[in-house]
Amino acid sequence: AIANLNLRNIKAVRIALVMRNSLPEKVDVSPGTLDLFESTAVGTTVTVNLTNRRYRYRVVETTIPIRNALALD
Image 1 (cartoon, helix red, strand yellow):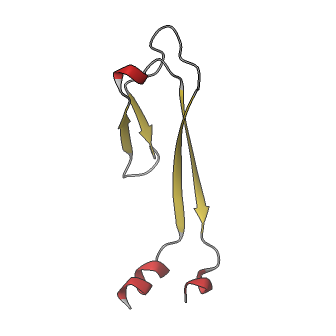
Image 2: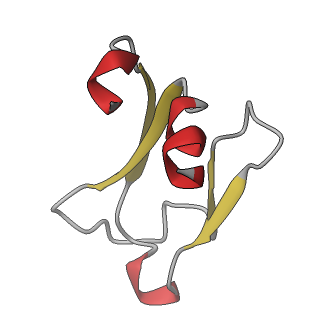
């Protein structure tokens, strides 16, 4: 019953994808850390390994609203 009540309070789901280029560069091109969810109070930082800093990274974030809360019943 408590879990059902908690599920009803969820209004949206935030998803972040970290994408990496498939071809390495000759020199280090990416920063040591990638920031996820910067616009929220609970932002997260992901550390990139030193061996993987020759790849280019891109962070894509999206918010998916949950519109049909009746489906949780």
